Image (cartoon, rainbow, N blue to C red; front, side, top):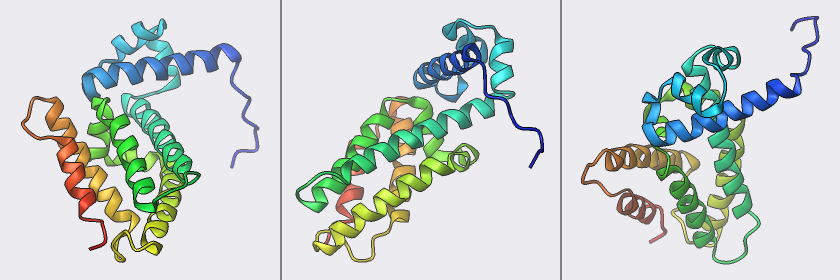
Length: 191
């Protein structure tokens, strides 16, 4: 660790970073990972150099967005922990809310469907998400509503598959992500 303390970002630099992330989120949601840095800078109202000052590569920008997305998904799962009622419905509802949020975003589907470096960069959100999902799974299993052998890795696999299906559907394919998710969740139910 460096002996020089890092100075906090200036307020204008923080605002620019937030504007860049918001613009990138919109651009990537519309165009997927093919969105151009120039378009992101224009949408954010900053120069391309400002984008690269905050995110030296497009990959770094994608990783920052992935981290935000996983934080959002973790918040969905953690909110479900506070819900009362049928443990299966609470679990499935959290998965559906996560899927609906992701399906509207082309880049997010591409990221969860096969962009491992961005997923790995989001370790804090992924850990929060896994912890909340593990608890939701445990509750559904304890109520006898979910397969006893189901794990959080099963949910990760389902969501990665969902990412592929949703991305293909957005590209004009005949696949239906809602049907895929319904069938996948049905496989986790106790018999």
